[in-house]
Image 1 (cartoon, rainbow, N blue to C red):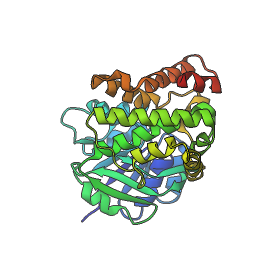
Image 2 (tube, helix red, strand yellow; image 1 turned 90 degrees about the vertical axis):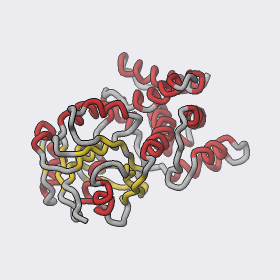
Image 3 (cartoon, one colour; image 1 turned 45 degrees about the vertical axis):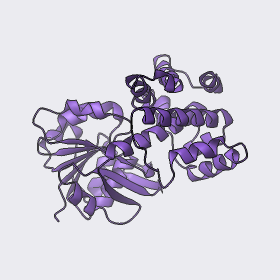
Image 4 (cartoon, rainbow, N blue to C red; image 1 turned 180 degrees about the vertical axis):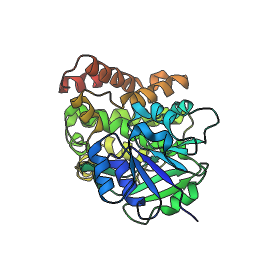
Amino acid sequence: MTAPRTLIVGAGAIGASIALALKDRAPITVADADPAVRRRFHDIGVPVIEPERLDAAEADIAIVATRAGVLPAVLAALPRTAGALCIANGLNFGAARARAPGAPPTAFGCVDFAADASAPGQPEITQPGRVIIPEELPGARALAQAFAPGPVSALLTTDAAGHVWSKAVLNAALDPAAALCGRTIGGAFVHRPAFLLIRRLLREGVAVARAASVTLHPIRGTRHDTMIRAFHAPLINRIAARAAARQAALVSSTMLADLRAGRPTECPCLCGAIAAAAAAAGRPDLAPTHRRTDELFAELLRTPRPPTDADLHALLA
């Protein structure tokens, strides 16, 4: 089965990891706004383009690994020959409306691996995992087969939305808590107020998924309900927190990086989207902490200041 021509839009830690996993097994092109990233891939023999030239790229599938906030603009600029696989973080399903009428299908997947970029275009995979690819995407099976066994593999699924929700529920709990305490994801587990926020956000997110009739899938083999029970059990929650801290010790908080750079965060597509889903299900009472967390991050952008433990305590009050 011939591997599809694949355009990877956004070569941060996740997009670059996917590009490196595919580069010897599929014809790929990388598009990124950072000249240093483009130089890195050019130097290792991968064709590169600037984002302004997306519509001229020759591709069958575009894997969009950008920040959530720019996803609609990227989808609108994709070549009309390419189906789109969106793996931007969060619940961004409405972004599909940005594609022109008659454009190839837009599908939503996610990844369950973690990576950091030690330098532009040079990712380090901190937790191996998969790219989740919806079966309904044209060319999905050939794309999945192009991933070699290794730290990044592929999973074809008929319930990609459930996998997207599964990751969003977890990230909506972990990333804001880490950003508010100024630590890595692992560091948030051993910071008591941040850990309490993780527990509450995770519990709310699972409740909203149930109200929305979403099936949550295990993340790297662990079910959300199992996490909740471990984090709330009086005798083992500290042990579970320490184990999670070790596992995620090297995973950076993207929200923390965005706050420090004064950029919009992904909170509206995580906490904000979960709060909106609760309201759409007629149960806004299920996600009050998600709503307040989204409001807090919006305030931190409007009136730039570093978050403090007081913010964490206010969310927990």
